[in-house]
Image (cartoon, rainbow, N blue to C red; front, top):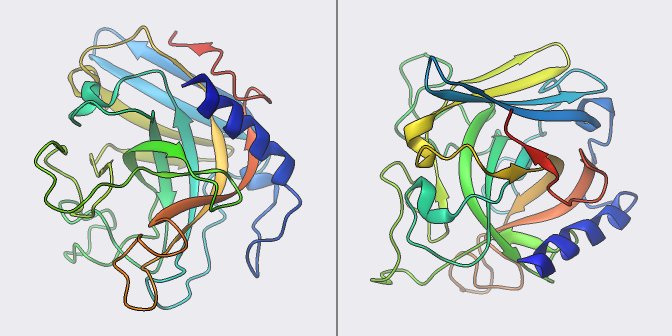
Length: 244
């Protein structure tokens, strides 16, 4: 686990590396602070990131297809276990990622823009639980952990989008206001854990569907990789923050 944190910290050196036509490196993705606050009366935790600019105002420019689709994220790496949120236990960093991606929708249970169409609102900021692991194929050094289709040892939460990677679409409410983006997580959805530590990262990710006849995520790049890190709340990804 410490090796993964070290690798994530090394990604800080990649801030100036261009990875896309529009690299989105602006004040909307410059994190100033992060917090997770427990409201015992309501039985929820409120996860919050404050940025220098307008949180969530910058969204990716679509490319019109799934392969190469850009994803922007405000991500909370945590010390929670994957099993705390419904995955079978596996190695890696459990993170809560607030994401936006206009080219596809991966929340089939939720209609975030309330227009009656459950498949057209990927650009609306929404949450995912993901398990991250080391991946030297991408500039950010991390990707969402994958598994072989049909692996009987893998258990995913019920709201997973049906991809062969450790991802869930939990449907928590995400709110952006001014320089702040927040998400509300019920206690029972994290195994009633309030003793974990965390950090916050703003980053650029990208989808790869495979090429040359390969299966999605089995080509030269991961299915969903981290290509650029814009900012880190702690500055060094030491996960120093505790739930208040």
